[in-house]
Length: 525
Image (cartoon, rainbow, N blue to C red; front, side):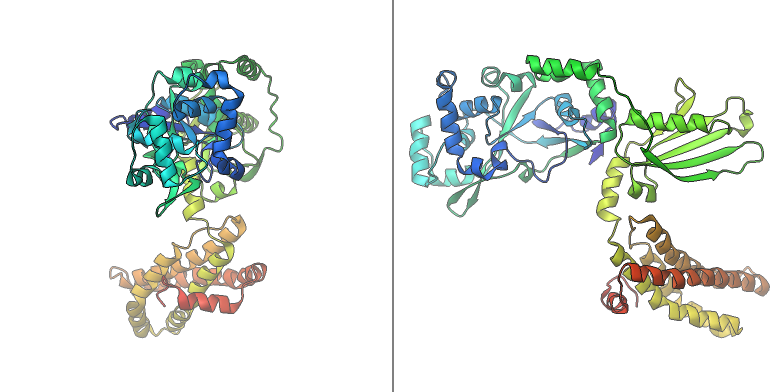
């Protein structure tokens, strides 16, 4: 998945697929479990697809009388908002982008790219699929009979069963201008969904567009939907009045464009960290804030500017913004703001994080924070109980070896100590590597505690490295290893004291940890 914070970034993504043939675009204002046709979203609609088709045409006979083919009538029904098995797509990427950002409510937008062969409106595939939308009886013989009546040609049983389950894209034609003028204005066409087929039976169930793998998905984060929508209007003239030329849409566009927005940052964010960054010749401070609710990028910048101005008695200020607690844990920033006192001597000024704006603030905008957030949600954040069990289980497994080596070192049985370290160096390192694969908790306090296990094994893993050093005197080597054990002992105290609190809070029994050690494929023990 790609991320686009602006039209220029979006266009660069699209350029990657410029050599693909028959590329189609679909924009959606949110991510849904499935991309379905409107008629498939209600069981009643789908079960009576044929009735919806017939009754709608009956009510507007004058408009449908000139249209002889089912696909023509479906296109017209789609224009009027009647549920059909058609799914709107477009050949114009910026139109799809508009649909992705049109609704600036608090969801991310998505543009899907498909590379699929197009079919003429009079092709056998489209004739069959559109005919199925009109039929109450899916008996193969009845389908063959009705097909011949409509299209004056025969169709075999094998053709019906093969073609009925295809979801296909209809080639854009000027004919659409009369059938569905809005879709034509949007440089649009549609995919027509096939039925699910089991054996020789066609079911009254439709396939979703998800059965066709997109060649790319571009995500427009909620934070940038409003600014991208504004850019589409100002630079390209793509807005509600272009997409929907009817008067109500014009009215909505005018009202939204000139509506006064009173934004207050109060309660919109929390300061999670504030740190002085030591420097003998400049006062420097760094802050991390987490948003308490979704905000667009303009609102976020207003918050950051307010904080930068409030802290401007310092020579340098950095503000790091996280969308939520999970992104804060992963240090996945939406953007970073910076202020540098212009009167500060150049030799004490830090490197600017980005371009300076007209107000003297510097900005670094992340172009991948949203897709990274998706990745972390899917691959990094793990259930708290599982995390604790894995970390503590591996800690308990390695701790007896740690205790043995510590006792040998304290009792100055150096030859035996060196031998045991050498024999177990690979095992200790394998344990160290395994600790890094367990993932993170969304609970910052638990995540900080679990990091103690990694600190412990990291220090333990240093001991074999020191033992291998041949360039150190025995005194220097003894000092370094002593430090390792001292630091590790401090962490062990924390693990033992705080670990009991977390075990009780997470309702973890010792048998849970023993089972984890027994059945873990990652454990070297």
